Image: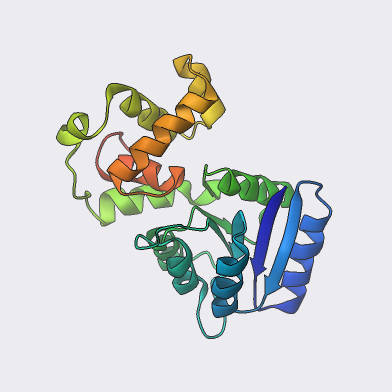
Length: 221
């Protein structure tokens, strides 16, 4: 069962999300709140598998709340999927930099939202496909390279970890990576668990962004 906290300041949207999730046998909405501070408080108390977070909320907004739940300084992060009406670059990149594992627009199809929440809860991360190329171009072209040059990657990662990172950056799931490399899925997860702290990231999505940012893989045309 995937335990979810829903945070959205619009009552009808919040109720709709709760109803949508309640209809799925593998979801359990443990709380529904209307602002970021309440989301942080209840999530820290209940430790859900994922928080479905709006961005624009009174008091503490969704990005600030995400930073408190899964930012770089958080020792035991709680995964966050940002779900918003606003297709705005600063919101998108701010959410990723705050530690969010996923970002989707509210006009996504219900099945895509369900898949996104499942992916984030499983530690895989997700992003609306219409936004992926913009994310890559932002981190590579506009925001420059990261602190680690690609030439030093072999000093940071083992050859197997690098293999996994390259496939991860192509959007492959753990199962697909295991099939490509003839490994068990549990082995892929173990490699990811050791690799992500080396990169200073907390999710598969952030690891993929790291790979593009540091020129480990080239941005698609």
